[in-house]
Length: 235
Image 1 (spheres, one colour):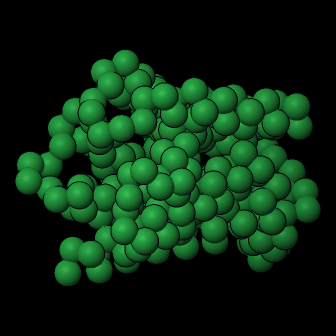
Image 2 (spheres, helix red, strand yellow):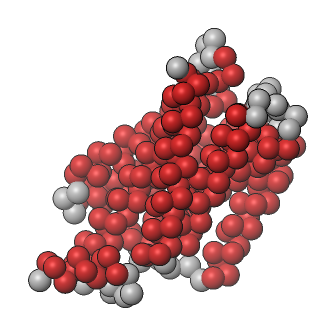
Image 3 (spheres, one colour):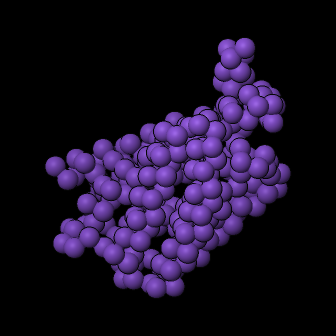
């Protein structure tokens, strides 16, 4: 049963990453969030393949899984997430050079952190992950406040709960493992479900803020078809 729940949780995260990542790119031209969502989905696909093939920590697939994990925990679902969401909170649109640079930074971080690969606790990297998660959570609390302010209270609650759950997962990841959790299966069921919910709810929250900005005429609709159509129907 636990193995089935693990697979379902991973498939949920994979779906959310690919589906909403493509929507970020196709509808909103947001490559920061779109590519990061797709990278998370790719990571989930690799993790599923690794698990189905026996979960050997010495395999090449495990090395890939560790790289993707470090990529997203260090820069992806921290700096890249914040910069991507700032498109609707601060109308911030980075240049192509900045987009490339931040993904290069995440790649370098993922490669550098490979040296800490293993099951034993490395306090330095683990502490770094918790600190950058905490800093990101501060911005996400502001993001939730913006949602509440525009009347999207359901999304604000959903984003708040997903963020709180992700923070708990970040603490559990290294410092507070679940006792007697064989192969960390229970942890990964909780983690993959939480991460999938983050991808889902942050997309819908982004869309709500974007639609609000367009309706308030503080942002042009541009070529974003879904928002433009929504704006037309409002009138």
